[in-house]
Image (cartoon, rainbow over all chains, first blue to last red; front, side, top):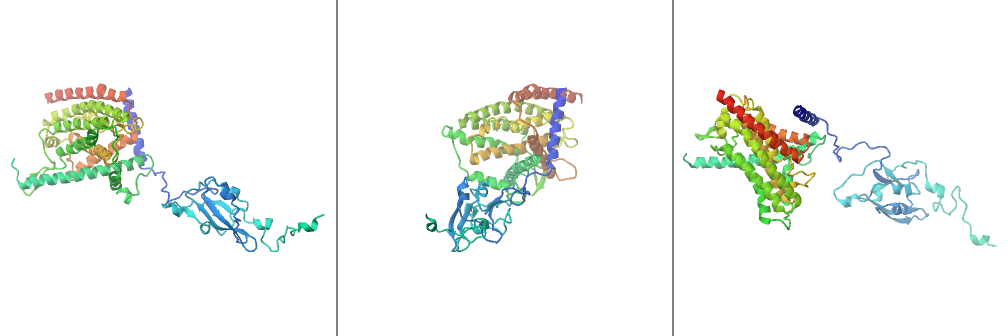
Length: 176
Length: 329
C-alpha cells in the first residue's frame, strides 16, 4: 500500500537526519584550527637567501612583470661592489592570488612559494608585506644554488675576477 | 467578576511576562533552528557571537534594526507597512488563551497562568489563525511584485485549505472535553491525554499546523527555490524581521496548542507544570525543525490534494466515529 510505504519513507528520512545531529561536523573553524596542507601547497610568498646568507633577490622586476594582479612592487638599488638588491620590496597579499607565476619568473630563485598560509586580517593595510616580513633565513627549495657564483656580475672588484669568468676586454685594444 | 487594583496589576504583569517569554523563545528558536539544521547537515552553525552563539539573536536584531527600510516605488505604502504587523500580531495574540501552568494562589487571589480564559478559546484561536492569512495576502499584494503576488496567492489558498482540516481535527477534542474553554480542555485530560483517544486527529492537526505556519514541506508561499522569498520578497530590515518573528512565534504558539489539545498541556507526573509545558512546546518546536531538515517541498497540486482529498475527509470521518463512540459510552 502506497500510504504505508510513504509513511515509512518519511520516518526513514527523519531517522537519518536525527542520527546526523550527533555526527562530528565536517566544518573547520578556519583561523583557530587549520587543516594540514600538502607539502607543495602555495600558501604565501617568501624571499629566500643564498647559501652564504645574502639576499638572493637582484631586483630585476621580472616577478612584478609576471604578476597577473600587479601585487608586487619594489625599487632596485646597488651596493658599492655592484651587487643589485631591492631597496624595498612589497607584496600586497590582499591582491595576491597565489598563482606562483612570480616564483616561476624569478631567475635567481629568490622569490618562492611557501606552504605556510598567510593569516587573514580585518584591515587591508595589514595585508601589505614588506621585505623584512617576506625574507626568511633559509634557502628554500634549492639549497646550493647561488646566482652570483654562476653569473658573477658585479660581486667582485675588479669585475671579471669570478671563478668561471674572463676579465673584461677593452675593445679598443683589439681593433684592427 | 469585580476588578480591583491587584487583579489589573496581575493581568498587566502576566501580559508583560508572557511578552518577554514568547519574544525570547522566538529569538532563541531562530538560533536553535539554525544550529540544529546545521548539525543535521554536518555543519556547526552560528557559534561565534557569545558562547556557543548564544548572543546571535541579539546580533540579528541589531542587524535588522540598522538595515535600510526599503519600500518599493510601486508598492501600496499603507498596506505594505501594515502587513508585517498583520502577520505577527495574531501570532502573539494566540498566546492570550494559552495556559502555561496550573492555577496558583497569589495575594489570596486565584490566578490562572493564562492571560484570559475565554469560554470560546478555540474559536478565538481559529479566528486569529484566519486573520493571520491577511499578513501573507496583503504583504504579497502590496509589494506589487510578481514573486510576492504568486507567493501570497499560494499562501491564501494553502492557509484556507489547511485551516479547514485543522479546525475539523480539533472538533473531536471539543467533543471529548465538552467545552471550548482552554482550562476545561486541559482539565478533561487529567487522567488521560487526548492523544490516546484521538491519535488520528493528532496526526491531522500536526500536518495541518505545519502547513498553517508555512513550514517545509508546505512552505510554498515562501519557496525560496522558486519564488525568491515568496510573499516577503520585497521586505527588508525590521519589516522582514516582523514576518520572521511572527512565523517563529506561530510555531511556538501552534506547538503549545498541540500540546494543550492532545498531550494534556501542563499536566504531567513529577515535574512542575510549567516545566512540563515547556518540555512539550520545545519538543514540538524541535519536531518542526526536524521535519524542515528532512523533507523536500511538496508540489502545489500535491499540497492541495493532501489537504482537500485526504486530510479533510479523514477528519470528517474521525468526527463521525468519535460521535458514534461517544453516543455508545
